[in-house]
Amino acid sequence: MSVSGKVILLTGAARGLGFEYARALGQAGAHIVAGDVSDCAEAAAAAGNGAFGMHLDVTDVASCDSMAERAMETFGRIDGLVNNAALYGSLRGGRFNLIAEADWDAAMAVNVKGIWNCCKAAVPGMRQSGGGSIVNIASLAATYGMPFALHYTTSKAAVIGLTRGLARELGRDSIRVNAVAPSAVLTEGTAEFFGDKMDRGLEVIRTGQSIQRTLEPADLVGTISWLLGDGSQFVTGQTIAVDGGTVLL
Image 1: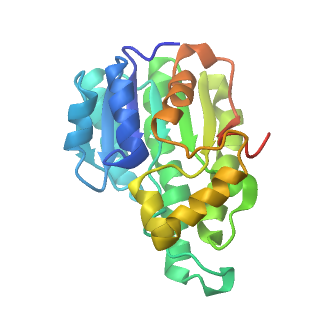
Image 2 (image 1 turned 90 degrees about the horizontal axis):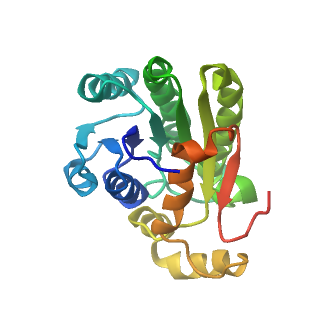
C-alpha cells in the first residue's frame, strides 16, 4: 500500500487539492515533482523528502517534457503521475449556449489536452522504470451531469474516456491508468467557481450524498495513495467516485 520511495509527478500542485496531495504523499515517503503555472515552492516544502517545484504549463508539451526530464535527471525514475491541473474556478458558468467560445477552448486545452501532454511526457520514464501508475482527476460533474457548466462537465467526461482508452494501451507496459471523480471539495477553486452561491451550491450537493458533509481535500488522499501504491496493481481503467455516495457506479 505504501508510496514510500516512489517518484511521483504532480500537476496543479500550487494550491487546493494538488497542494494537499503533495504534502500527504511527500510525508508518506514519496519523492514529489510538483508542477504548476503558479509558484510551487510552498508545496515542495510541505512535501519534503527531496521534493522540488517547477513551472509547468500543461498545454505546452515542451513544458511537460521538461518536468519529466527533470524527474529522471534528479531521481532516475518515474513511478507515478497525478494529473490534477485543471481549469475550474476561473471558468464562467451559465447556460450552455451562452458559454464563451474562449472558455470552452481553454477548458479543453487544460483539462483534456493537458492530461494527454503529461502522459506523453511521463510514460517513457515509467516504461524505463518497469511500470507505473497514472491517476487522472475527473469529477462528479462528469459522472452525475453538472448543469450550467457544460464546458467543465464535458472536459471531465473526456478525462474518463481518456483514462479507459489509455489503460488498454498501456497495460502491456505494466502502467495502470485510473481516474478519481470527487464531488465539490472545499478549495479556493470551488469558492471561485460558485462565488456568492457557494453555500447554496454545496448544500444542494450534500443533500444528494449518502454521507452528507462536504468533501475536504484530505478525504481524497487515501484513494490517490492506494492507486499510486502497489496495493492496486491489478486495478486499471477504473473511475472511482469519491463523492460521499452520490453516483453509485
